[in-house]
Image (cartoon, rainbow over all chains, first blue to last red; front, side, top):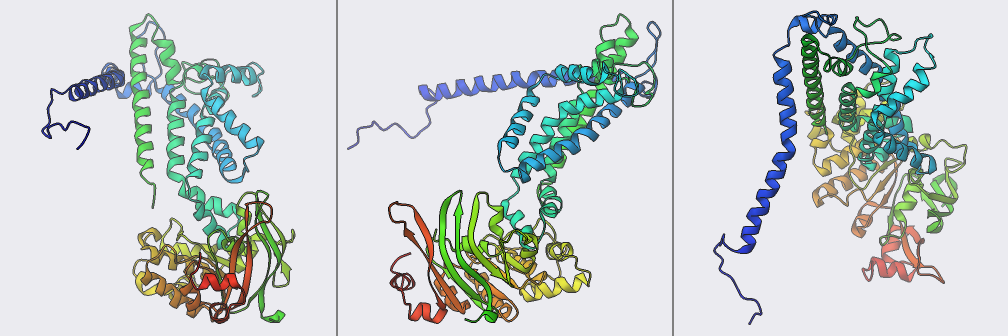
Length: 293
Length: 262
């Protein structure tokens, strides 16, 4: 004898539990669709509005003076690449170095806990604060050869923004490397430096590279830290210590101008930026596949 | 045992993790050119003592050692001793096979290269693989990843990697515990070859294995500390393997080797 009533084994869609099941599946599906919608719409809209404007001239020429037609965003593309390169050259060595310190050398003391906490806080700091910080530190003090706004200052502001991501991904990636691998290297007489540079870091290469690429992609699209560090320039880049154009600031400046030519350039710029960030994300995914040789 | 036949001498070695005593008061003279086995129940500290022999414990946080481990006339824990050099002369094979994520060839060449080897690398790799009885299986795929090998082959690759740098001593921490009987047999056969040129210390849970491969056996046991329920490991008996298994002097050894506990 059992104290439960046994139901039929045949599926009965009319049972309350089955009805609830269907309903909730539907609701979850609906919300998911709502969540993905902006992603698809934004990308599609930008591709549609900007994609049709892309020509060789647009990619290679300077923006026109207000009121004139034609022109391009060549200087902004070059500027974004240059500023991002400066940022990467600063943030990647410093960030990977800190990550290596945290994961391999630090013994979990107060200092390493502070650095980890600091990296987490820095990751949450609004990007405009990074801009203000670099403005106060570099631009207003004219540290670099008496220059105020410069590509260098913009690069440093983006580097500050990239640092926490690079530190955290390196730290996490190295923690995932099996301890046995380090023991194995130490066991054949490798010093700590050789163990890290020849065994541990290569083993964690793929996730670190992924994190770095994502950090670069994020930095490349930032506007706020550049507005009052790199400023903008309607001319071709004039070295690292002069104001420089960038696509994100170009969009910020041109999108609200009352001239059609400038608004078109802002759309084209959005298109190029979105494509570059998409490409970087795809590159990151591709790098992520190389987990094991 | 006289001094010239002693390879590693442990003098009143006690090891603790984060202030908690794990093994206490070990005196032991590990003979040169022989195979010495450490047996005992889990938690008795045999692996801990093994790792102390080439300063592998340095890599474990909070691990501290008192007493002396004398090798080649040096106390290995003297602050002037270079731990990296110690590990070059006292190699180690771990419980879990841990080949590097590199090719089979590079797995072996790595150790030689970082130790400044200037000779014929191909020949060194072949010699090491032959000694580890892995040459025939891998000679056609030296460029393939070490991960492409089976578990038993990976462990022999790790042994080849250890002997490629020609250490004086090889420490093995339960090298067969993750392997099937056939692979175990191959590694044991290999150890019979290796004992001609190296001092080997092996930790094993398998008493038959200790009988098959070792000349000397040390039996470790855990004992409750008086006045607390914390347990601390200690060396109970150390003698020739034949004596440990046939004529043990301690009751605990007798009980353990006859399978009455552990």
